[in-house]
Every structure is written in C-alpha cells, then in structure tokens.
Length: 101
Image (cartoon, rainbow, N blue to C red; front, side, top):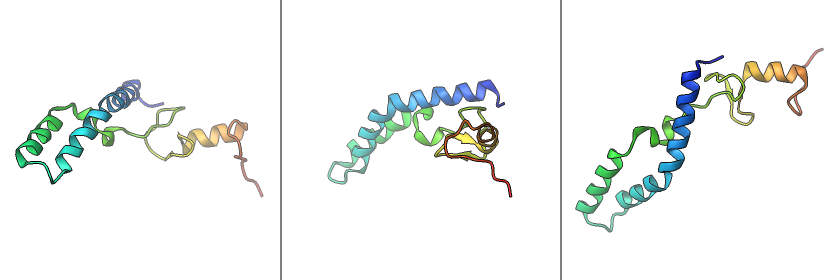
C-alpha cells in the first residue's frame, strides 16, 4: 500500500487541475494568439506563471485505485499489475482469467 499522504496529495492535485483548467486554457489561448500585441501576451504569461503549479495537468501521477501504487499502472483498468493479478485471480475483473496450460 502506498503512503496515504502521497495518495491524498495526488487527489488534491486532481481537484486543483479541474478547478484551474478553464482559466489555464484561456490564458494559453491568449499567449498563443499571434494577432494580439506582445504586451498583452506577456501579461497573460505572467498570470499563467502566477497560478498554482499543482494546477498543471502534468503534475498528476497515475496511481492504482486499489493500492495507490504509482508504477506498473494500466490506464485502461486504472490499477497496478499486482492489484490486477489479485482481483483477476478472484474473478473480480470482467474478462480477465488466470492462464494455465
């Protein structure tokens, strides 16, 4: 099991990203618009830099929903390989069967 503090920090980051997404998109659109004067674009870039760093989508770490493990993460199932094997063996994941030959 991952540290609870790391899992909670990542949850807070997801909330911050959701709250800041619209504002960040507007500022990025202003910055990328070549038709606007350079002063206005520069002010927008300063505003973007003043926003919280955790509002950036790249700060989110993919973690297992079951254990919180940050590595060996399957995006489609939103869980780690270890949790997938345990739940797959118990028959809790649809379409997953432990192979034997």
